[in-house]
Length: 166
Image 1 (spheres, rainbow, N blue to C red):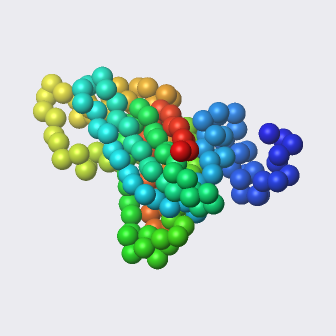
Image 2: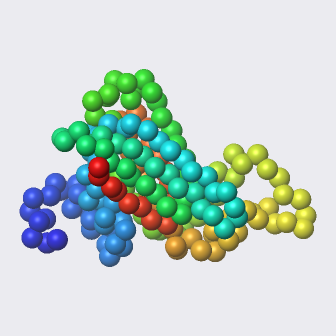
């Protein structure tokens, strides 16, 4: 990796330093998705209590035109904001990049920030944080991924990811 650092932009080198020894965060920094087009987003929700959600972004590579699938596994939370007018203005290059953190406090804050959007109320004997109690106790197994678009952002609390090119 050190030999290639001379060819990397300064911003990427800073992100790699910030990622430190976290293997998953370092892999996210090196993703080649800048200026790719967004083709589709697919959310596969859990079907049982033990099953986990999966989120897929289908992209078109800006250079080769080949299809890429960016998949997040073991998803716990998703926050997605998109302005389609801005996306339409950037129809030829819609993705900005991706980043990742594994900071426990940041991930806990992210998971709790959506509580008011759940539209649920848990009556005694259940604890008010009943659905996320286990997730919060295992928060170090997750990463907070951010996929940035020119016109939006997707924040995903998940265990891992994979990028496939077809």
